[in-house]
Each structure stands twice: as C-alpha cells, then as structure tokens.
Length: 97
Ligand SMILES: [Zn+2]
Image (cartoon, rainbow, N blue to C red; front, top):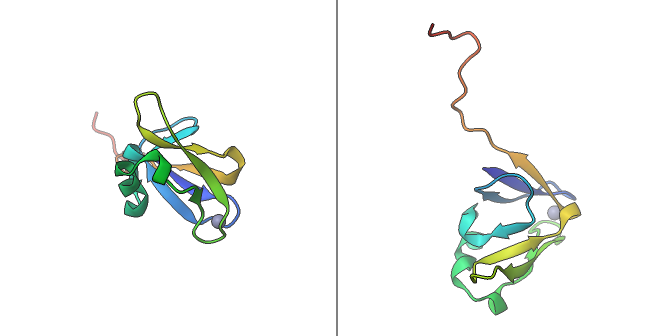
C-alpha cells in the first residue's frame, strides 16, 4: 500500500493499493479519499485532471487501459510516494524460538 503526496506542498493526495512504479493510478485501487475512489464509476470523458487540493498543482491526467479501467496517468515529478508498512512487524526483542 502506498500514499501519494504532492511534492510541492506535501498534501496527502491518495492512498493506493499497489507498489513499485506508479505510472498509472487505477481508480478502482484507490482506497482514500472517497471523492477520488468514487470517480471509478464515471466515464473517462467526465474525469477531471488530478490536482492537488492545496496548491492546485496538476498531478495526473485521466486515461483508461485497454479494458476500460479508469486511471490517472501520473506526472512523475509532481508527486511523492510513501510506502505504508502494515503494523505486523515483530519486535526485535521478541523471540519465539
Ligand atoms: Zn500541493
């Protein structure tokens, strides 16, 4: 799972299931915010550009893959990714064996 932030003002943009290169951000893999996840049921022509709510920086352009899944084509320099590690890591002081 990753979080996407605006590079310019560090505003939270989205939480997304996936990892690695974020070239296309598929809307059906967006967890938060709902305003963004809900766009998956609209049509490509109705999709607005993905912009930062705070500073208005453009982060992505609407697109779709060959099966019609809606996505944003992300503009590489406009956002930062932050990996989220689930809180499942064991304490280094705990030993079971
Ligand atoms: Zn911003």
